[in-house]
Image 1 (cartoon, one colour):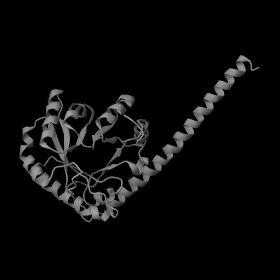
Image 2 (image 1 turned 90 degrees about the horizontal axis):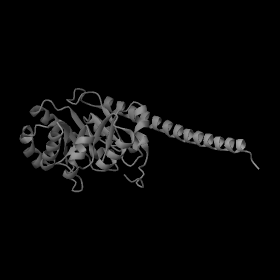
Image 3 (image 1 turned 30 degrees about the vertical axis):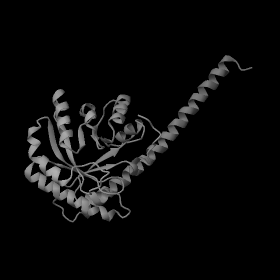
Image 4 (image 1 turned 135 degrees about the vertical axis):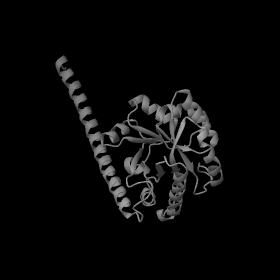
Length: 264
């Protein structure tokens, strides 16, 4: 029969083995994440070098937003440890869960469709709402920002690809909205967000991103303070950068496939 001290030693060794296993698993995952990040950063630099126009209005630097949708909260700690401070989430509820688990660190982007009934939570949680796609939503965000004494940074999302399943302002609604922006005192327009159609050949996304840059250039003539053009995701961010994006939203290329079994 094992003595008390022997039993305690076995318990201690078991705990140590579990700790070592957890450390090894995390170390392996973090090494892979670091390798993925290095590859993405190299591709960003390469895409900047390939720009035909070196004097774009969006500047010569690109901000990488790490999209953590359907990944556990701890992945945010891991990517921040590697120097990435910009976090992108598609859903308000998932962002709320992760901020409650970790605290709010870094700069948070809402990049998914926002329903007006979630505007209050979104304004409280996010530094930049990239997906304002209607005047109705703009008014809701403005109202909630005023309520808490905040000026909310926003992007207007354009549906340049004309995909019915995608959110975003069409050209007519966008042009009608622009003159009304000064009426909304508690939002600050920072620029535009564009999502291209999914294509096997990413070169087919180039016209959409080129149109996005042209829209940004025209917007900057009317509102000189705008400084953000958010275009490009894991499958097409290099083309987006070549065409003028200065924010890219990358998830799968950093973290691998999403875990849709996670519930938030």
